[in-house]
Amino acid sequence: MQLFSEGAEAKIYSHQILGKKLLFKVREPKSYRIQNLDQKIRKSRTKREAKIMVKATAAGIMVPKLVAVSKFTICMEMINGKLMKDAKITARTLSKSGSLLAKLHNINIVHGDFTPANIMLCGNDVFAIDFGLSEVTISLEEKAMDLLLMKRAISSAQFSKFLSGYASEAKARLTLLKLKEIEKRGRYKIRTLTTS
Image 1 (cartoon, rainbow, N blue to C red):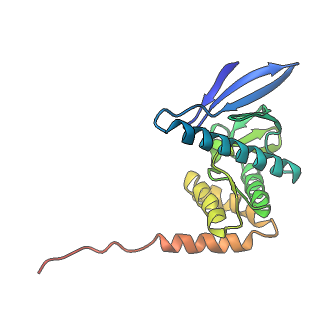
Image 2: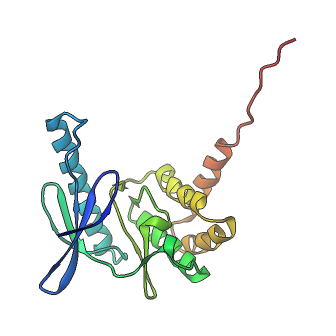
Image 3: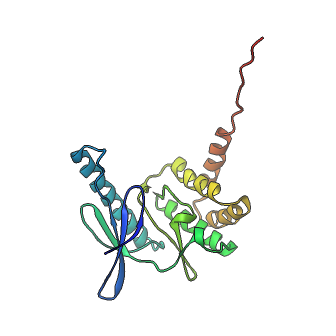
């Protein structure tokens, strides 16, 4: 197996089996955690991520297909494409990415790190990748935070096109209202102390 990429939580290895390219996401031990706790955390996160990928695939959402899962490792299909952050971003790509996130939200999957670094472009298809921070929740707040992350990662003109794709999905309205509420919360004026 060959090291493909490395993140804060896991290492990704690539390997070819029977002519098929696969990726192996391995959650390796963290020496700063107590061993039993570390194993419990890595096992539960691996299981949760695998379940979310299966749920998304079953709903027809473009994510890498799960091939196998073990205690600390997820084996998935390798998507041959380019990360959105490294590609020319078009209005069509932005709209499709927005629609993709809305579809995840419609089945109560919050990605947790939905940015151009976790969107894969493959021909005309747009895939969501890396569900390491994902969870299943009905929380509008968490869904709106996915939108806010993307808003901070791209220009306002690009986000407008992204939102048009997101808003095209039936259940998007309440999340968009929650996003506005969160943004208002963040605009408090800083008070300065004055001395007389």
